[in-house]
Length: 417
Image 1 (cartoon, rainbow, N blue to C red):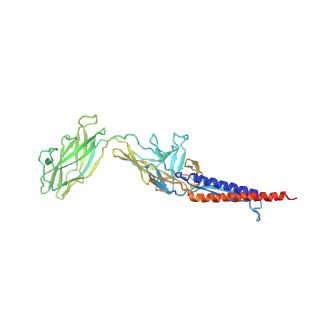
Image 2 (image 1 turned 90 degrees about the vertical axis):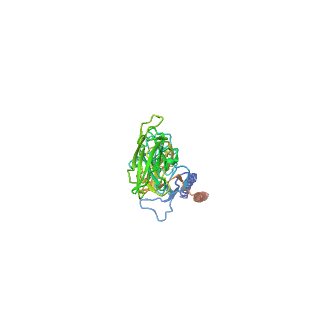
């Protein structure tokens, strides 16, 4: 009986050392979760149960369970590096470029992602990150998850159709209205400001607005605005008037039409027509200035940067200063994470024991929040593992001594005459 007990102890100690060795080997693996060996005693039973004097027949490795505790989060310099703070897993699917083209779904805590040649967000194994793709208007609808893809190609330009121009005109200025405007002579106007407008091909054009103050009346003050594009007067009418009451508030229609024909002709649609909206403009006794400026047109642009917020919303910034919502990262949760089946490459597979995957947006349900430009370290504590290794070594040595002692007892019995 002693041989059986000792051998089972040696086997259990060997298994424990295997688990500890695997933990130590993965101490630097991003998103790795340490395991522990769990043991149970063994008894030989009969129809009438276990005798009260039974010594037991050894130990059995009951399970090797993973510990899904939070690892330390380390900042990085890459916006596509992500860490989950609290519960949940990234959801990835084996892409068509991998050997598993059927699209097996995996769970992982490794947030090391990058963009492949097709613009998909993938991990080092080529598996595609899952989430919800935003509509052209930037709205994310949380239906079935799909492959997240960035628009890395050139985005089309948009012709300017509306300019928002909030200004404050200095009421202390001397009137110049009635003087023939000459943009090269500053004494023919009171103030000017400018912005860029775009034609249908995305070519930029400089819109400059010159302001001439009229003589104030008992009801208010008029300002004549002259629109020039690329140094030339806009297509007639190129002037319009802003009227401010005695409290400095704008009282006239705030929107004015402006149109021009690019010169020289560049192949874009002509004429280029848009409105200038002066809503919110004022006339107060302080220096003239632009208080707000919007423009719905833009030049073509390419992807410049990616930002992912804590709720998983992915925003792309382009070289034309446009920002677009690409989609949202999905998080998978399980009722029993310890029931997941490890499959290598920092992946887990759903099992009956783990329960079905529950998909949520970061920060909703039981899903944790995301931290962009950061990675979750392995939760292995090397100090603890090395102490456990010493304990397992002693465990192994003690069981080996049991076998040795039993051998000596048996040898004594054989030597009896």
